[in-house]
Amino acid sequence: MNAPDPAVTRPMPHVMNTYGRLPIALSHGRGCWVWDTEGRKYLDGLGGIAVNTLGHAHPKLVPALQDQIGKMIHSSNYYEVPLQEQLAAKLCELSGLSAAFFCNSGLEANEGALKIARKYGHDKGIARPEIIVYEKAFHGRSIATLSATGNPKVQAGFEPLVEGFVRVPLNDLAALEEVARTNPNVSAVFLETIQGEGGINASRWEYLQGLRALCDRQGWLLTPASGLRTSGPASSPT
Ligand SMILES: Cc1ncc(COP(=O)(O)O)c(C=O)c1O
Image 1 (cartoon, protein in one colour):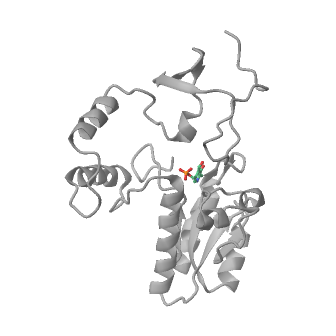
Image 2: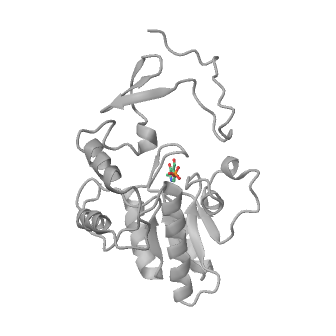
Image 3: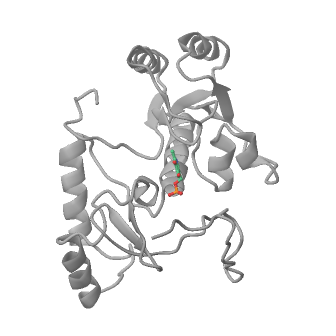
């Protein structure tokens, strides 16, 4: 079957035009394979931008979701949610951390982390806490997270940006030391350990070790942007 013609665009006039789209409409998937509305099959290398980690039509996930939706679709956080606690306990066990915060998107996770970083600063007596962020990082498209993002293209047209960020290059411990020397208002470091949108830029292992030591020395929070993803015990350096 022929590949889709990129010159053919199917307009979506009722959906707000916030993204450029490829001329492909996906209709269903199974595992790591997806099919478009014209029957073409693709290997799904995108995974919904790395969120479909179990693949499509997972044989355990689908009946579990159907079962829950058949019982109750939503109860709000005004009530106890025993299954939520059960999942949080599992996440804590796997990550080695003490509690989970559930949210709807990457940017909401980052907003939550930025709020924790500011609150931590206030609790330490810093009236206007500042957060170290990185050149070329991407943190989302809400006003606070696009301000933390290190890409002027994402920010253009949405100024004034949220203040309270100090930007440094990745893998440059001297730049961090300089901030430590000159800025007493820093409360946290907000790090996308492997930058995706900014190119595939990985934090070096020695940099992470130096950063960890500096945060301990300075009393700064070290916050992994978009939460913590781990493929093994929390002590593993992967
Ligand atoms: C590193 C990173 N942080 C945050 C986000 C924002 O996540 P969401 O689109 O779920 O708000 C993205 C999205 O691509 C991302 O790649």
